[in-house]
Length: 147
Image (cartoon, rainbow, N blue to C red):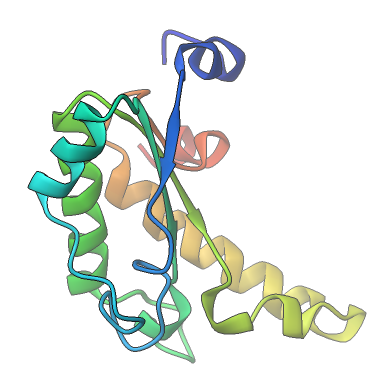
């Protein structure tokens, strides 16, 4: 990474949120949105946006005992990130709502299990996205740990 988070943020002029898609229950089209295509990303770029936030669910695509995210889902998310990077947009990929598992389990009794699940998710996400450059902001503080 050649730039700090502050420097990268200064390069973002106008951001687009791909909401209600990658975090939808029941798959990407579960809440009535179409699949994200490269043409869609190109349209967003042509409309003047140079950053795209991809709020994403992981829990529904993971093994409930091991927190292993399905390879097919990681690959699909990576494909959407690639559409963005290929079309010169910054990407902010995060966990969003995710079926409510996190906010419904914020208790001292569940702290260790929640932390373990978060760690397992972010290790997999950071590892899957590690080959993207600084235009893709995927948990920067953990990404370097998993190179």
